[in-house]
Amino acid sequence: MPELPEVETIRSQLAPLVCGRTIERVEILDPRWCMPLSRDELADALTGRRVEALQRRGKYLVWRLDGDLSLVHHLRMSAAILCDPRPEPQHLRVRIVIGGGRGRRRRLTLAIVDQRRFGTAQPVFGEAALESFFERRLGPEPFGTDFTAEHLWRVTRGRKAPIKALLLDQRLVAGIGNIYADEALFRARIHPARPGGRLRRAQCGTLREAILDALQAGIDAKGATIDDLRHLDGARGSFQDRFLVHRRAGEPCPTCGEEIVRTVVGGRATYFCGQCQPPPRGVPVSGAAAVSLRRLRAPDRARRSPPPRASP
Image 1 (tube, helix red, strand yellow):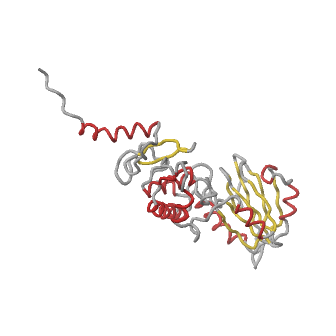
Image 2: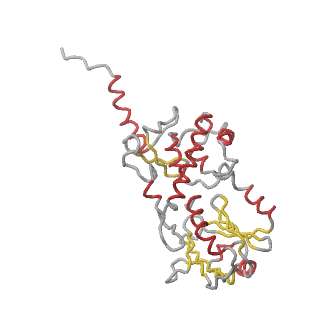
Image 3: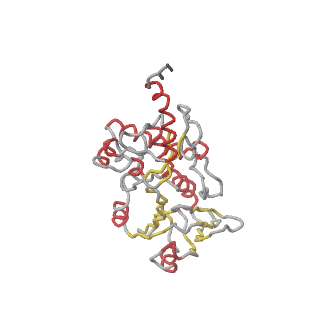
């Protein structure tokens, strides 16, 4: 968190404000933001450069600056970018002053806040170096032409890891995190613990469409605000109000009415409906999920059991 829809929301709000303008001043208050570079080194490299474009790749913001320099910016767990905040916010890590441009006179001050201090920024010189940076880290963009059902089929072959864990691997597909993996798997009616290699070809096609649907729903809702994510003006996203299963343990499934359960898959909290997403054979389901599934199966066992013998 933030995931692709949240980063895309920030990008779409920020790009019209900064593109065509010049970075007048950069104050890096937290040296961890730009390590291993020093604060002064990165500030000097950015100051005076014109913002030519603001792009997104996976969960990264990519500031395209003149002089063939790109700033690859990752918000990580808790960062947000606020525009001209008043009063100055808590947990301020970076302050960027953007000058006027194309007839716009008013300066903008961008405040990057980050309570957990996990956010990072890295300068990359040249197009080839930028492509290499992402090739080592990211798979195809979900909305790109390379993300196909055949791609999902190919990268899951022979994989014993749960499909939920594979979706979180940014090298297989970029931009999906815990929220949208849960939401996509529910839409596709695939249990999150199913080994990736057990997916059928048709299921890969269904899952691809479910991923796109979940991500587009998040973008339309301007992202989800669960903890720290905010828009440029401090407003919250609304996708958390439209979750189908994520963080809805104990509530009725919107499709079948059975109870949504919570378990852990690949070390991550995971939410699903045991009726709509039946568990794969031979894969144990633990915790609350196991209890719920036993309850769901109890009527079937009762119907199959022979009637009790009459007392002599």
